[in-house]
Length: 130
Image (cartoon, rainbow, N blue to C red; front, side, top):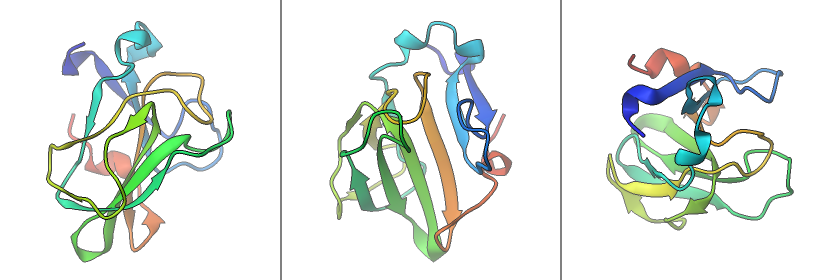
């Protein structure tokens, strides 16, 4: 699947309460099975501060990880099918850190991506290039 076939949804398609992140999948969720297992890469250099692989089906972000970056910034990557890093690992921008999945509270294949400043979510869509 090509990058131009991806679509960034503000918020989360399955969760109507306040969401500051974005859900990245295919436009209209067509052919999402092609996304399953595709690599998720780190948005920037940082240190993995949280890896969660134990979750209840249908709840939360499923398998997810959080990377701490400079100056209080963090990124969260949710609904992963597989996580390829461990807490404490140093990562570089573009490193493969996980694989796209559909774990947790979602009915779609994709990746929930959230940016945080000082542990508080910010409006992630403002940081996404078209």
